[in-house]
Image 1 (tube, rainbow, N blue to C red):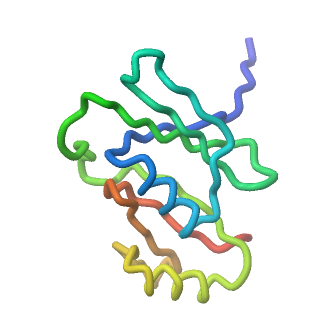
Image 2: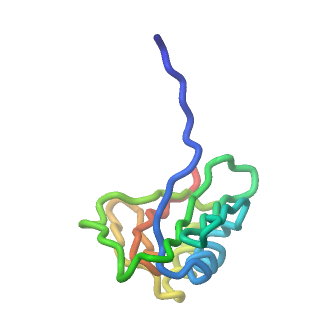
Length: 125
């Protein structure tokens, strides 16, 4: 049996949904493309994506979760390719104060969101 699968979405849990949505819109150009609300108000899901892309980032807000999420050592991360002038994008991220790690040898850098999830930023190939 040969299975063919494709990525649909990736979930992260967030403390402040609106702050996270604004971060992903401002820093990566993602916008809300879907949402789901629990009937009892216990959770809200917001799906973000970029134009022409089927992959979605699912932001989950949990009403009863207290305190920051445990993210381990931040070795798991998202990676996004950015179109246009990579150096200008990096400078924009620098002015936003969201760069958390740079690797000049590899030519990449990471930004972190309001919940400290790391996002690798790559130039479009």
